[in-house]
Length: 337
Image 1 (spheres, rainbow, N blue to C red):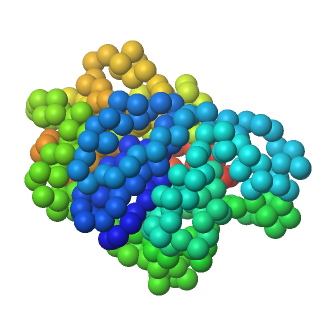
Image 2 (cartoon, rainbow, N blue to C red):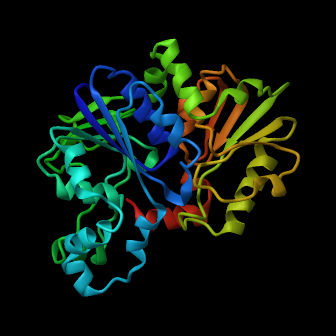
C-alpha cells in the first residue's frame, strides 16, 4: 500500500488497521472518513488528527444511519442511489469527498455497509481494497426472494466481492473464500502487521487509543478472557438470551479461573452489573493491543469472534461457533449461507 489512501471507518478494529497501514505509508497521503456511530469515536478524533502520518479526518455524524429508518417504499428502492445522494448531502460535503477520492485507493471493511455501498457506487472508477473484519467476511448473504427482488428488480447494491472496482481482498484465511475470488486475494494478518511497525509508530497508536493505562492490567493465576459480541444489537439473540449465553460460558469454562470480559465495541450490555466479580475490559480497547502489552491469559473463549485469533498470548483458545447455541445458529443461518 502506497500513494494516496482513503479509509472508510466505522469500528475500533477498522480504525486500528487504518492507523497501522497509514503508519506504513508515511510518504503517501492517508485520509480517513469516520462514521461516528453512537458517538463511539468522539474521544479519539483529536488524538488521530495529531498523528504525523494522517493527513485529514472527516467525521460523519451518527444521524447518517437514519436513512435506513425512512421506510421501505417501492419509490425509495427504485431511486435508491438518488435517495442516498439526497440524504447524505445533509451530512457530507461532496466537493470534499470528491477531493479525497481523487486518484485515491479506497480501503473498506464490509461491503454491505450503507456508507461503503454509497462510496462504491459514487466512485466506481477508483480501485477499492477490501480488508477482512471478522467471520462475516467469509459468509455469503443468503439469496432470498426479497433479496433477489432488491438486487435484480430495484438494482440495489449489495455485498459483492466480485465487483470489478474491488481490486484487492486482504484476509487471514484466503482458502475460505470462493475460488473465483482467489486472483484478488492476499494473506493479511493484522497482528503481524501491527507488531511489524517501528516502536515509535506503535507508541503513536497506543496513545491514539488512550491505552497507556492498560499497561497496569495484570490478571494473576489461572485466567480466562471472554470476548463478547453484539448478539442482541445485531438481532441474533434477545438481550436476555445473550446474557444467559455468557452465564453458561462462565459456568462451563470459567470455574477456577480469574475471569476477564472484553466487551465488544458495539455491545451495549452492562456487564459490570451482571458479573460484578469479573474484570470488565473497556469496549474502547482493541483486543489486538493485548499483544503489544504482553498481557497473557490461560484460556480464551468466544462464540464466534475472530478477534480471539488475533490475541497471541492465550494458551488455550476456544472458538465455540454459532452451532453452540441453537437459537443463534437458526437466526444466523436464516440470514447467511
